[in-house]
Each structure stands twice: as structure tokens, then as C-alpha cells.
Length: 222
Image 1 (cartoon, rainbow, N blue to C red):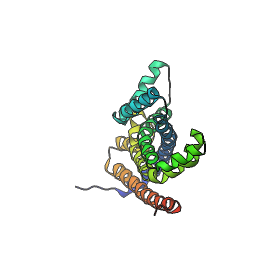
Image 2: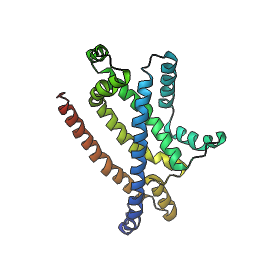
Image 3: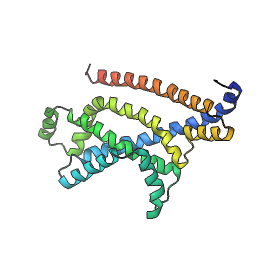
Image 4: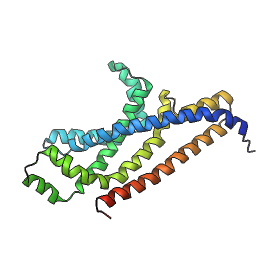
């Protein structure tokens, strides 16, 4: 029988809302790492050094082919065996940032590949350095194409933050599990967690679609 207790919801909601702040912080920090590192990985695969290109490519494929939860465990539990002691927050941010950086590197690569060859030829004719070519010409034109994928992974990171609970990061799912274990009631905390994720993910996805349209409009692509 459906046994929903509103008074219990009132008791646990402030605690879940506080954990929501931790979840959002984890998602934003992890995404920030992924955005920067993903671009570095994408550019590293386009150098004139075959060994570097191959090494980075294999690294990206390895990260993309293994589960995020395994990477979280590896950074947090295996790191100390090599003298790398990290807090759960730090280990979680590194793992989730590295994981999504590998995916974003492919998004960047597709965006860069979409830039017309004439833009590269124009940069070469102007004797621009590789750094100036990428920063002034190529990347600004690649971002509108890559923006949709980048936005999708922002939402993806937010939905994957519950995996950080496996190493004790006090995010939303970890808090819901703790509440359920304390009160032997899981219906209300788990339902509220689902509703909170839904309430954040749907507006964020809508806002990203509008931002994508605005960027493409400003670039004259629609």
C-alpha cells in the first residue's frame, strides 16, 4: 500500500536541499575541469608529433571505455598506494572531470573538423602561429557546432554525480541513502531526489537549447 508521509518530507527536505547545493557544486567543478582538459586533449591529438597523437588518442579511448565508478574508485583508493592522498571531494572532481574531458575532447574534435578548410588556408597565408590560428579563428567557429554536445554533457555530469556517493561525497544521493538508513524509509527521500534532479535537469536542458540557438544566430548560422 502506498504510504507517503508528508510530515517526514517536511523533516528531510531541508537536508536534501543542502545536499543539492553540494551536488550542483560537484557538477560545475567537474564540468569546469572537463571543459578545459577536454580542449587540451583534443588539440593534443592534432599536433605534428605522431607519438603524442597516438598516446593521447589511446588514453581517451581507455577512459571512454571504462566505467566512471571504476575510475572514481581507482583515483580514491589506488592513489594512496602511490603516495597520492586525496579527499573524497578532490578525488571525485578529478575522476569525473577526467572522464567527461575524454568525451568532450571528441565533441571539440568534431567541432574543429567542421571548420571549412578555407579558414585554415587563410590563417596559413597570413602566417599566423598555430596558437593564434586556433584561438582567433578555428575555436570560435567550432564552438557553435560543439555547443550542443557540450551542453548535453553538462546535464550528464549532473546526473552522474550520485556515483560520487561510493566514496562518501555528501551529494544528493548519498544524503538520501543516509536518511533512508536512519529512518528505515526510502520512498520519500528517493522520490524527492528524483524530483529534484528532474526540476534542475529539464530547465537546464531548455536553457542550453536556447543558448545554442542564440549563439548560432549571432554567428549567422541560422
